[in-house]
Image 1 (cartoon, rainbow, N blue to C red):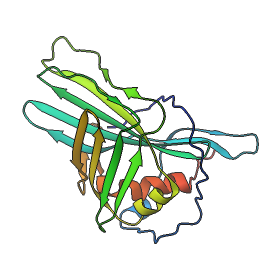
Image 2: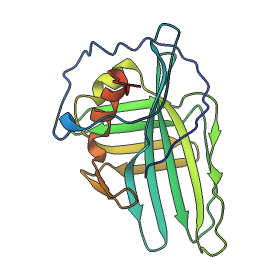
Image 3: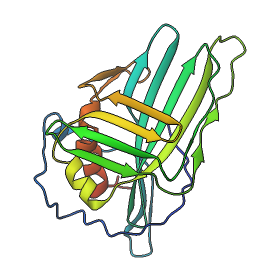
Image 4: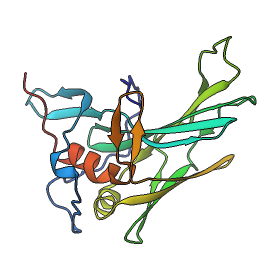
Length: 214
C-alpha cells in the first residue's frame, strides 16, 4: 500500500543519532544493494543540511480472513535528529470496530532472526485512531490506528544486524503480534515487497540519505 502521508508530530526527546558509525556489524542481504530509496518529503536548513525527512509508506503485513482483514504500513520520519517509526494499522471487518489510543505505556518490540530483541517506546502525546469514511454499499467497517515510536541509536544499530521476523505492539488496551514475511505481493501497486528486510533497507535510507537532484 503506497500513499503520501502528511504528518504532524511533536518533537522532543532530543538525541544525537550518528549515521556514520555503527557499533555492531551491519548485515546486507540481497536484494538490498539495488533497492532505491523513496522519500515523500524532506526539507533543508539554511546550511543545506537535511532538517526533516520522510520515507514512503511500506506495507509490512497483510492478513485476511473471510470476515476480517488487516494491513500494517511502516513509515520512517526524521526531524531535529529524532528518528521515528510511524506504524499505521488499517483494519476492516463486518463487526463494528472501535479506534483505540496509544499512550505513553505503549511499546513495539521486534524479534530478529539472529535472536536479538528491540523495543521502541511510544513517542510524543497520546494518539488515537479514526474511522475511515464509510461506503454505504460496503458491509465492512474500516478503521486506522496509528502510533509513533522513537528509534534510539542503539535500537537502530541492532535493527541493522539481521532480518526482522516478528513484531509485537503492547498497550493497556491493545496487544497485537504479527509476522514479517519474506515477501508479499502488493496487488495495488503491482510489485513485490520484502517485509523482513524493511529495517535493513529503509534505515539505510534515513542514516545515509541520497536526495534526488533538482
